Amino acid sequence: MGLVALLLMVLDPFKIIRNYIFKPIATFSLAAAEEYKARKEKSVNTTKNVFLKLFVVVLVGFSVVWASIFLYLYFYYSYMPSVLHVKDVHLNIRDCPDNAIDCKPYPTANVALTNHHRFLMVGQPYKIILNLEMPESEQNGKIGMFTVCGTVKDYGYMEIGTSCRMSMLHYKSNLLKTILTFVFAPLLIFGYREEKQLVTVELFSNFLDDSNHPATNIDITIHCRDIQLYSAQLQVVANFTGLRYLMFNWPVLSAVIGITSNLFFILIVCVLSWYHWDDTEWISDIRDRYQQIVKGASKVASIEQTKTLKPFKETETVSKDWLIDEE
Image (cartoon, rainbow, N blue to C red; front, top):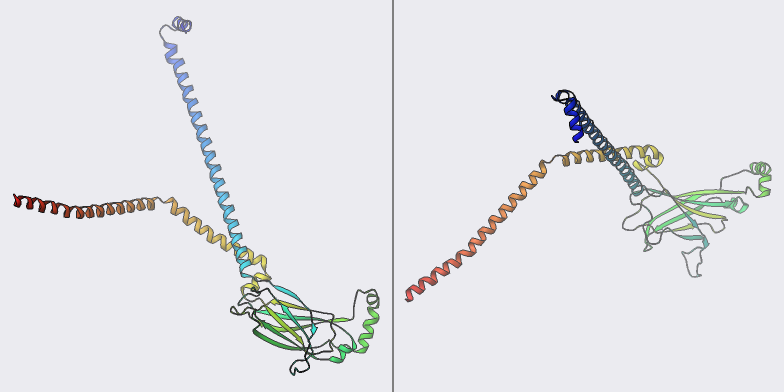
């Protein structure tokens, strides 16, 4: 440092170069460096703020969208009942004692819909259909019309509803049977087709379940002893109307409308909440109210304390007067 000062003294004895050249250059350089550093820190902070705000917006938007979807799915699965319930029907010939008058040996079956739990949704109409798989035999052709009855019962075996419907095999002439036999002969030979018909009997067209007596069982009776059957199956089909009909037949459109509506209302709630929390006046109001309550409580406590001290002072004065009288 001494050598540098000696050189500066020799080269610039009057400090002209140092005061008018080196010093302005150094000052300008330091100012430029500090300004660059400040701009860099400001840009870094601005970038961090932008990324932080973007992350918060994306996170909130993602949460709002998924909340809308979850709310719609929850509403759909709680509001929409099961469309179809299928139960196998195992028919047996009823055993009747010799002395029974009303009992007749008809094919009957008791179908358990549920195990003492609610099976159908209250307020939703249902169709109860019995499908009979019947062979196109001569005996079934001779039977003609036959009656099928269904009785719905609750868990206490109390009758809720009864319905009887008539049905029969679809008529086919002998000529039509012969033509169909020749046409479908290869399929009939190899077992890909059978000479049978599916007879559909709609027992209940608009059945409504009772909340006090929910349906748990149904008794099926076919009033024809000589009928021939391959199998029988019971179907409980929901007959949708109104909003359920729209949601079932147009699920995509219903989902778009439902999710959009949920998203709209959730966004309104979020915006109102944002403005409510952004405004700090309500916090100061709460603080002032709390201070007023605290002051009021302290005043009440001081009043009660003065009330408790007054009798004590009065007793002291009385005792002092008594002592003076004694003297």
